[in-house]
Length: 418
Image (cartoon, rainbow, N blue to C red):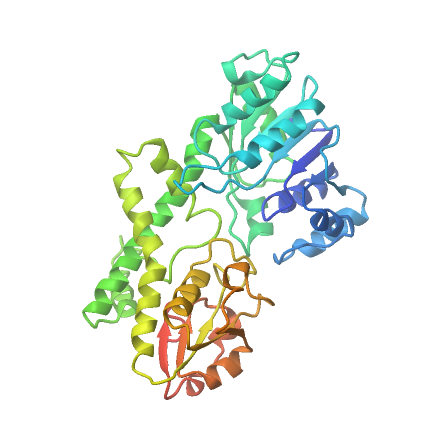
């Protein structure tokens, strides 16, 4: 049987990836300290509470804290392994912003001692894991780091990207295969000993750069396929053809599986990760760049269609249903729905726009400055609206009766009301 990790683990970043990872490990009998720079998050986890919505996570956190296996802190403690799960957004030029990763590496550097394991889970461009090792090495010249390929290093550094779907995180964090890429073979094996604690899927060992690239490729692949669906939707709309019927028929071919179009692409991963590939090889990543541009442009197209419909009315009321980046979660990161709403509000400053989302109880900061936007119950919003725009297919929205939509202009970007 393969070696299993023994010791104490610190997980830096108690967000949508870090907290579930910490809980998955803690419930296997390992002492875990969750570290976060947000005092409110630290306080919530310390109470056994979850600062965001994710099915099954609240019960797991409460249980792990009650058992004394999971604690929270604002500074990294002494530990035997450190997992970095902090955000990796991009700059205005769409290159990766690694400032949070570097800050985390610099935080743990003083705590490291020979034999420790450092795992980067944050999605990163190829070469980032090596840079983490270099940043730590610059602060700790007294310990040997593996970024120069030294197989006799004191610290074991690896990359293990998360591969979970929000809304199914607690299932997939256990059942999905895991890719573990080390700066050396021994680094990969040491890091794998952590994931063998809870992962039921296959653990695939490789080098760090390949692991980094594999995660980016997974999301770029999905982005390209979504772009095809979104572009097809615009073409069929211009030709007055039902895109959903076209996709239904085409997908009856045994080797065709067209995805569903939508108002854009959201979440932290798919809108961001392909740009890391583009920035790594800008002259070669032409298809990936084009797909990202198609999907980035999609919210503008949807907003333009709604504005055109609104101009048929003298003084319309518009209901926009959904703000999160996907159905049945409270995550609004990179949400195309928010961008669509802001674009409509900019173009129709004198038009009342009613917004409803069962998972959002306050307007996101991106929308807080608009005087013509108001949060409203979905049924009341639909009742008052002349135009109803479905942006997110939350289950409560799917249940809206068709007779409530009668006599209204309906723009269903998700195909949920067909």
